[in-house]
Structure formats: C-alpha cells, structure tokens
Length: 269
Image (cartoon, rainbow, N blue to C red):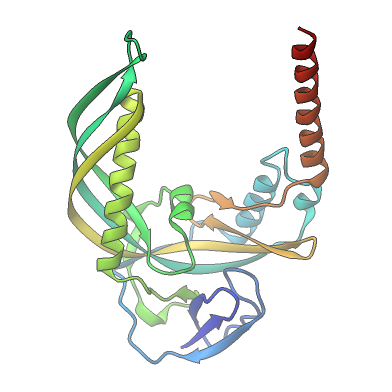
C-alpha cells in the first residue's frame, strides 16, 4: 500500500501499488508523487458500497452537463475522467436546544415586532474528514444510505481511499457550528423571521467515521481543469461548471439595456 500526494491541491490517497494512478483524483493534476505510508491511519468504523457503476456515473455527468442553460453546449460532449474513491467523513447525530430571538412582520410602525422562544430537535450532520470533500459537497450529495454500511476493511480495500486527516475533536467543533446555523435557519423559515439570533446547546449522541463511495470526475474546458463529485449510491452530482461566455455577455448586455431604458423613461417622466 502506498500514498499518492498531489502537489497542486495537497490531496492524499492510499491506493494499491498495482493500480495505475496517472493524475490526482481530486483536481486532475498530474503533479503527483508517491509517499510511503509511515504512520497509522485512524481506522474508520464502516464503509458504504458502490451502487452506481461507471456507465451510470458517466450518464449522470451528461445529465448534469445539460442541467443549466448557462452551461456551454460543448460541455455535454467533453471527455470526463472518472475515478472511484472512498472518502472519509464524520457522521454525528445530535440533540439541539436553541434559545432564539428575531423579528417578524407585524402591523406596527416599523412593520416588525420581536419574537423569541426555545426550540428542540434532533439533527444529523456530516463533516468531511479530509481535504477531498467539502461540507458543501457532502450536503449536496446527501442522503447516503447508512443501513447498507459494512465494516471497514482497513488497508485491504481495492478502491483508492483518502486518508482521514481531521480528528474527532476538530470535526465535533465544526459540527456544532454547522448544526447551530442549520437550526437557526430552520427556525427563521418556520417563523418567517427577518433576522434570527440564538444560542444552541448541542449534545452528540452517536459518532461514526464513514468511508463514502464517490466518483470523482475531472475534465478540461478551454485549457482549465474542472472537478465534480458523484454519490456512488444514488448518482447525485455536484460541482462547479464553466459558463457560456456568449450567454453571460448577452445577459449582461440585456441588463444594461433594460437599465438604460428605465433611466430614459424616468428622465422623460
């Protein structure tokens, strides 16, 4: 077992030495070099199996490429490099009690009135355990079916996997911040608050370190590398995509034209 580290994005992946790795799984860079696995890896609890095969992952990319009018048409026909990988993430199940206050619309002189309360709920949260997957990407890829989890096979996995580099303590602090913000956002929507402030008491009930099955896609457009990730259980895709310059230019020109027409009309009035 060896570790490949990318000089461009600092991602580290353990892989079978017999398996060829020509580029970084995360950013597509070829600036990779092998490193010997010198220290013990934090052992994950469970792993989730791959349900989406390569052909379905490629189809998911094509559907994603057609998902927005702003994407260039050439994107649909680009060649995408797909690599399977198991990426670590902490999963916390927690109880939350939030003391909140905010402003809601009312028949007052200001049009607002203060409200407050205490709310309790239970929420799960996933926090990435390394550099290969962001909080935003995990949230976009969810849900993951945890009932299909199997015991982690440690370094015997035939699929490349990223090394956990975030401690449980560090992940817990991040989870508390995310859970508090998520609960406040939920309360703001529920009570139609203009602004929601609050303080949350969070008690974590269960903690697991999971290995998530992910297809990592990389492609090049106009000479620049782009990256997307696919949930290998459901086929859900998230990632940044290039925008069609012509469409963006036309939209800007239309907005400027509308602004000029409105300015002319107001001047005439």
